[in-house]
Image 1 (tube, one colour):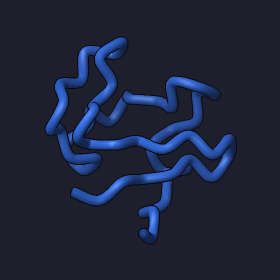
Image 2 (cartoon, rainbow, N blue to C red):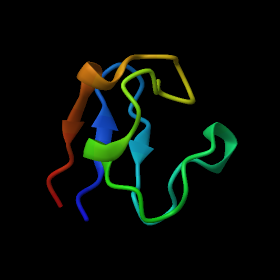
Image 3 (tube, one colour):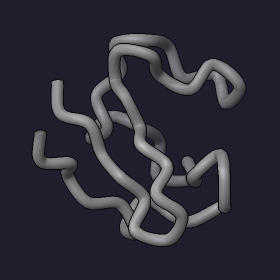
Length: 54
């Protein structure tokens, strides 16, 4: 699964890890995150994330 990077602060959402503090289970693809999910580091909305080229 592709990782996504916050263009504001550089936080990387890793689907393999999810975002347990926000109730997002490991294995949750970025595309399936709730619309109201925000960057856990800076609070940026999902549209401020870009796919991370590895």
